[in-house]
Length: 600
Ligand code: FRU
Image (cartoon, rainbow, N blue to C red; front, side, top):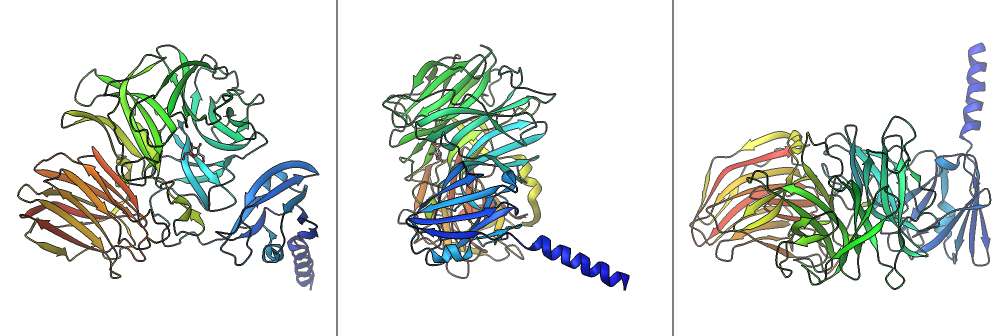
């Protein structure tokens, strides 16, 4: 009996706890007002991918809290997004939605909840590339290493799967391969959205912001808002767990007639014992260099860009660092990365770079101004920058890029999330033919993911040849390595395909000295006219081509010659490519050391 009473009391108590506070919906003349008490973790909102954008003003205890732009469901619910209420627990929240006639579907379904469940494993969710838990992602941001942990922040829309509400999503990793999602690091505020930027460890506490034993992490970013684009600072004294915006933001303001001024990348310049910032004057197509003793007050030093390199689009997301020249003891160069959109080699966004010198104030390009160098020749490698503060004992220069292209990024056929990063890559300055180039190659940690290996005998391909055994249970995440000896051929190629007739084709034309990847028949391609494409890259004429190809559900990264030529393209097959065919034209090709690894 006693047991039954306890049970009933407990049941009544639990029922009371579960009685969630309802969202009170009030229709007003030009819209709707939602009011509720933030007793749950989330306000869950139903969204429609292509519905019109609406402004959403949020007040907490009757004070302005934040403004977002959302695409509320009007005809159908495509996905849900959570407004995170954890920072405003138990407060009174009012949400104002303007011009909101006809949104009954949204208003009838919006609800409070303590969990946010959604389909994570949709077919094009990558297995080993970083992608946001849900929502839209673009550039990598705030990449810094501290106390054994790599931080990766990113341009994130926490309230939708198209670009908006720019915030810094945040993830951490100990090995650059397995990532753990962390709470959003920076949300928009009255100075504007949080655009791209970088992070560093303030080793000498030049800012004076350190408050305990841990070194302060500094995040420099662009606030894009009512006053145009200005530069701001946030800091963390708890190893990147929480971030506080600096009280006197902005720390560097824009120019009267050119508000496009963004993406600060900061590093410590040991020789001059000062901080250096490279930042894009996007429309002017210039990279400006600033310096600072304390990391807060910045002086203009110089500007680089006029008439230099690719000028087919605006300049964004720069990076500047010194690198050893492989194979030449004691030789080093400075590399300036400058992302460009559009105007890439196969259209749209791409990352170009310059090799030269930097004296702490001025960058000098060693090449002819008209020379153009691309880090990656595919269509889906953008906003690439490198990690700060990787220990000297490691010594690597590590980069990651956004694996998409502004031409179609907002339209790619995923649902709960949009886009992924490239794999983390190690950069090296190597000689390709007569030229010094910036090679990029998957970090060695990626090899840990090889869980199954299929090794093939050498193949002599006379015409075409299908390789029978692929991986047993192929879930679309795998790696191919091989040597192609095409010295007797004119064209050597391989096709990855599936039972639906979808395929990607990779080939090398010896006579043209070019490598290609054709994704025009790769699966879902009609979501945007610019998507179907054949991308190309110049390759040296040589006897053997060493290829490494990473395939991950919705992407293909091709590394030739240990990354001296790279091509990254996203694809959307409706079933994994699980068959492989080699072909040759104008003579036989020898396929040596062919291996396929399942990656997990
Ligand atoms: C590059 C970029 C940056 C900007 C950010 C906004 O992709 O346009 O210049 O800071 O995206 O999301």
